[in-house]
Length: 234
Image (cartoon, rainbow, N blue to C red; front, side, top):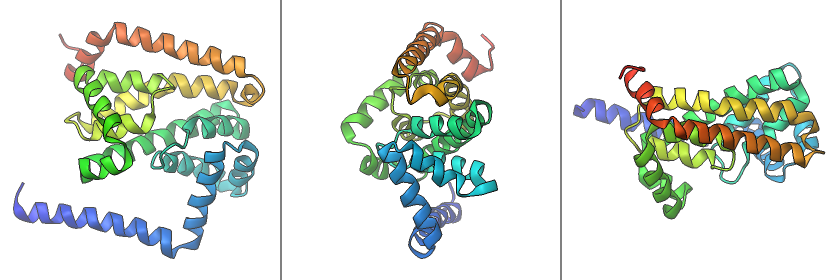
């Protein structure tokens, strides 16, 4: 990379951080949105979260997508909460679409942050011990690891996205694996969403089904890796 291009890249990275910081500290509406929305997600407060999203009226779908994207940047905030809330608010069809879009944007944000700012910043977000596990997982299975991790709900979404950003996995493959892998979980939990609050058994069944799908993907991991790497050509 030439020196002018490198300098432009540094300026863009610093500029992006300054814009985000300015939005948080100098735009009260943006700060309130972030803090209030994340607070409801952390508390798993479905009723307050529902009211918070619906308060934005016609902008409620965009609010939901923004919240799903935002939660990806905050540790220990489960995306499943807003997936269920979206199904409850919009019905499972639209709720699943909004959750899918928001989760994909959030994963891409994590990926780009890691790729732009590197390991030193990521290690401030994720403990080194966990990050080493993710490194080993991705080195062993490549892009298929991303696909599997999106299907299994117990694997932290954020850690895989940040970890993938530190690898040489192309952004296109990351997006395809993420977009594809998250479909089963989002659809299943969206369908169950309106009853999930009162039916723990349904959640266990859904999780079991997803683990079964993940096992199937792992079994065919070589073919899938060939598909991602070579467009399906042997």
